[in-house]
Amino acid sequence: MLDELHVKDLALIRDVSLVPAKGLTVITGETGAGKSAIVSALALLAGGRADAGAVREGAAALHVEGRFVFEDAEHASDENSEDEEAAAGVLQPAFDIDQNEVVVSRQVGADGRSRVHLNGAIASVGQLAEGTGATIDLCGQHEHQRLMQVAHHREMLDAWAFDDLLAELEAYASAYVAAEDAAAAFEATRNAGALSAETVQQARFTIERIDEVSPKVDEYEQLRITLARAGNAEALAQQVGTASEALSGDGGAIDTLGTAVSALEDAARTDESLGDAARSLREASYLVEDVARDVRTYRDGIDYDAADLASMQERMGQLQGLMRSFGPTMDEVFAAREQAQTTVAAVDDFERQLAHADAELQAAEAELALAAEALHKARATVAPRFAEEVTAQMQRLELSGAALECTVELRPRELWSLTGPDHVEFQFKPAAGMGARPLVRIASGGEISRVMLAIKVVLGAADSVATLVFDEVDAGVGGSAARALADVLADLARTHQVIVITHLAQVAVLGDVHYVVRKTAGDVPETTAEALNGQARVAEVARMLSGDTGGVSRAHAAQMLEEAHHLHAH
Picture 1: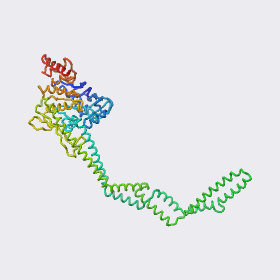
Picture 2: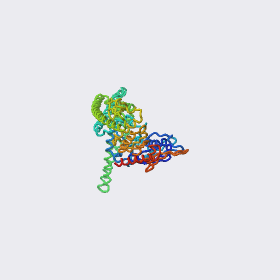
Picture 3: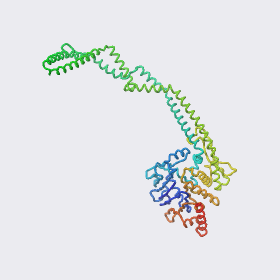
Picture 4: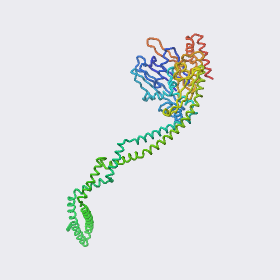
């Protein structure tokens, strides 16, 4: 709820602060004193449109600041209540805070630029609308936002009948999400199979082209090394032959080492110190023999005839052709074939996959249809009871013969949404002998105001809106209807924070807090707001009763305030 409001430089307001009651706050004053500026300030805190024309003449900007306090049971961090209220379509404050209060400030410059802060942090007007906008309902004669938008009628019915509808709401929401997922899966499968003929043809060509060559893993690298050797076979043969002759030919390194080893071994029989040299040289001779053997093997394998060389060159050409088409590396050639195979497999398996996805979709739709029928029947059952209770409250407000009807119509499947399969709308019946017509088309603002009050009372604590602001709700109301309206507002203040701008003394005396708005005289008038108590409040109520503050009017006003005090006490 709104704990405090501070307004600067808005319209005729220079600097005004209000501390509303938790229950009923009344704001009174002469016509033209500037009471509507208070409503404008609250509208800005609710994310309403900024108007540079509202900035007080001579000021650079207007400032509106409000502190909102949330009860623990309503706080957005309560995950259980979030889940339940989401199922019922009940709005919650969209504040990402850990505390139970938030300070909202809004500045509108004379240039029309708007700035918003939440707890000192920069925020957007959209965040403001989703936050405080979800907790305040501005109920001016021409500003019945939620009631005058048919989309909110379903929310109100569901909030009132939450316990009766919870099981059906949850079952329907679950079935709806499952059906949406199944539809998305079916569409994705169909799109995946709807490849162009050119794409499929290209994939098949890729497979055929690569399979004609049938490359092996690492074949290209091995062939590249072999061809490099074969292309220089003559030079290699000459060089390797020379090395082989030097190592193992007559008088070559092996023979020479053998002679040296034998001589050292013979000498070691006389001088043992030569034994190490003999052994080392013997080991070296073994190594040389190994090298000589490898060189001979290489020399023997270096003989490539022209046919082998041509065959290898042709194979290399085939592999390089694949790399030019699908490469530039062999890894990319293999990847291209794998991708092409996946594409062809998807097309070949498309019919089976599509049939499976379609069966899943049909099953999900069947479940949704059952859940939709159950929810529709449940809403159709509770709607008349809701309408009866609202009608009873309308009778209290002296809308004699008038009645509210709540229609619940099943929509075509394509119009179903997560909130349900049906269209819920309030209909107004002006008199017993007249037909009902859509509430949003009622011409009389007075009727709208009283119907709205009746609905608000019936919703009671089920309504997620914490603060209700009524402006001109008493337009055209007088006599016994005025007292009835005052009683209903008092009832409403038991479940909501109610701020009402009123011309009726019957309403004013019931306020827990009473502010009077005045406009100063002079060339530069200024709107002020003063909290009234004692004789000052008696005088204001007297003015509202008869236009003067004489003794008779004061006595009447004092009596009404005393009666209201006793009413509160009981």
